[in-house]
Length: 455
Image (tube, rainbow, N blue to C red):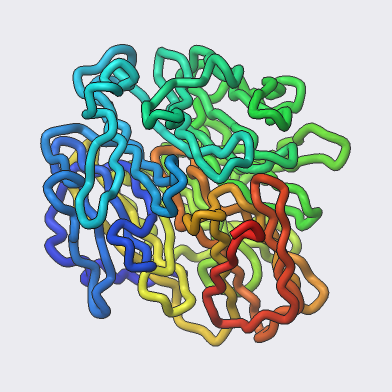
């Protein structure tokens, strides 16, 4: 499947890295990879037409802290995404270095937590992951932070520009050993929240429609209390129009939770997929544009794994150069960083030893594709929006990534491979506020930016 393109990363010395997020850092309309540095600078890798070069300024690089998790979203409704960086200099409980919330003002970045009015709100509890959520459909996002040995936090920007933790107000202020977070319209019409925990049950918070949540993880059979959650991927694994969960458990049985039409989930992972491993990130994406998503398991100190939908079942497929038998993978994300219609896979390494970042592409082919980027009314990526793509009588379904399980966040684009089809009958976009737009017969082999109906 994958070909090694690591030589395209400039200045790629061994380093201790963690999470990876994808956002438009410099405001040019193109996406960059942001990679957390643990005691070394954060990196922002931009495609310059020939290779990936680091464009992080000294503020974003923030070389003195120990970053692990990353997430981007528009919290103030100005059309540009802010970047939340979760620092964790301790394994659990209190930590020395607080988190960052970087906001861009032109070419300059400012840490909103560094402003005196926000000192009291800074997260000083170790954590692992962060995801964004538009819980009320306002077009402005908050950041949910998964603590380890502390309560979940929900940071939103108030009317006077002050940051406040509103987890208690929303009903999610529970003590967790949180390792992974995903947020999307999973079991309701609004953005729900799934929390993968270690040493305790997973949690599923259903959005009640008014910005408040109820926890239904055990009732819906995703609690899995004996396992230790890490990476999470979301996809419609059986093509029934409902989102399902792939949960990677650290050295435990991995799960493929299929959502049932009447409510609840059932684990249907085949033996090969369920086989325990030292898993970190789990990714669902159509890397070869054949019209079916693949499942990538990034393992720590063990070979990575790749699964594909073949012969009406999930089965191991050739991973190619991305096996990384001795790689200490700590985070991974995908994006079409060079705009050619094929996804790139970037893997960050560290923790046990300094290793370079790696970059992979799938083998070239002639498969069709279309990419859809929904925007908020302010023009920012509409994370949590759901996109449906119909071609040749089959409908594929994607959610715009608001946080991808363990430490990371994928590109804010719905990428659809079309196989040997080269036309699309219909694209439908559903925003977190319930707004809908339909595009009939949109052109294939293009990136479509779809404005919110209220723009």
